[in-house]
Image (tube, rainbow, N blue to C red; front, side, top):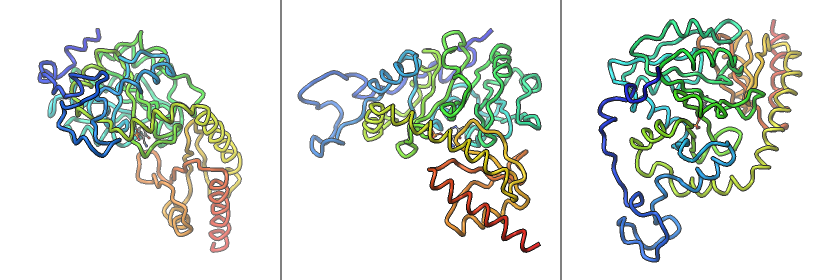
Amino acid sequence: MFNLDRLTRANIRVLKPYSSARDEFSGQAAVFLDANENPFNTPCNRYPDPLQRAIKQQIAGIRHVRPDQIFLGNGSDEPIDLIFRAFCEPGIDNVVAMEPTYGMYSVAAGINDIVYRKVLLNDDFSLDADRLLRTVDRNTKAVFLCSPNNPTGNPIQEQAIEKIVNRFEGLVVLDEAYNDFSDQPSWLSRLDKTPNLIVLQTFSKAWGLAGIRLGMAFASPEIIALLTKIKYPYNVNVLTQRAVLEALQHRDRVEEWIRTLRSERERMASIWPKIPCIEKIFPSEANFILIRTADPQALYDYLTARGIIVRNRNSVAMCQGCLRLTIGTPAENDTLTEALRTYSSDTSSLK
Ligand code: PMP
């Protein structure tokens, strides 16, 4: 049985959080003399809303959840770190994650002195849920899943996620950073029935706001309350809050970007297999495509010399020979495609 109290670190359970001035009073007033702010230099002289209420209200409407099921942080990286700090006892507990995947889960584990157990994906990058569940023991506090996965691009099979959510008695963190680009339904609709689930999403990808640093964690109100209790008091600054409230007024623009990026991904997926230097292109439901090539460093250097920067994933488990290519504007994708073609003809003429 899932028991949140038992999963929570004892020191966090009893912690009395810092109460900021803006926690204690958040209504309308003419004179604010409670937070030792400078009264000049508006509009940035005031502390931000520590609970980001206006933003959560709007996200709740869009994602069909309640505001008390939402945590907002400095990118998704903040809730990832807070999950370790709330639930994992340094030097004792462990987490289990699929491999390869997004690198920050393992870095956050390392920072928090938590053993990070990796479960290799199958050759087609699908997940063997039974193998993952066999890796779990009584000190496993969380399982990290990422769908669609980074850097492989594939969604994780729904049945595999379902099995882990149902059988594992700790927390299941499902990172849906790229879900907007995928055909798979989000797990947010199952939040109410899944008390051990934490879904991560972000404004950095489809929303086009990587620069403002705003990540979302969705979970039960009890889990959200724990993360909120241990966050820095004003973790999302005034400028970020203002920028996202503005962006939330233009959802049609986001929908249009998603349509364009998905269609560009499909265009590249049909063109690139015909380019000789590309040995394999992996199916993707994200805004990037993983490809395999004979000499990834040579191709990486060739592209860099032409001002095109991609991500070399050659040293990542199961990604030998692979580069990860983000889908850009149609013009950027054409520039990359042309460079891939010239690289192919340059290298074949050298042989
Ligand atoms: N999750 C995944 C799977 C990612 O690939 C990334 C960024 N590359 C993030 C989270 C980080 O998102 P954020 O910018 O919100 O910290």
